[in-house]
Image (cartoon, rainbow, N blue to C red; front, side, top):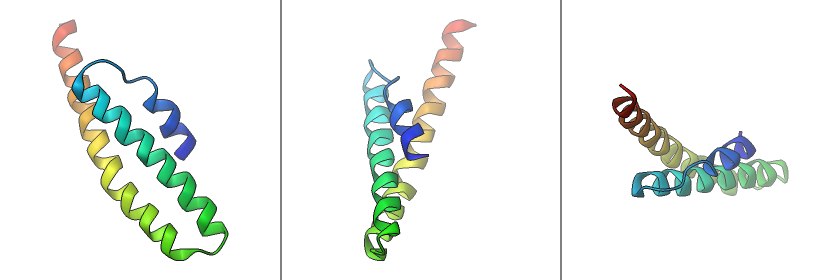
Length: 77
């Protein structure tokens, strides 16, 4: 999921809202990858911090994408 989110972050470019979504998805992707790697090494505290970052960045970024889709739908119709 971390790699997928990192790749998705690259499609957002342009408006201020898209820049925030891009940044949040990138932070989320890095946090997930770091959490998985450090969790595999047995560093539980780092995994918990990574999960906390995920719980904040992913929902906010998802709401931003929903707003972007809603705005794009208004332009098409």
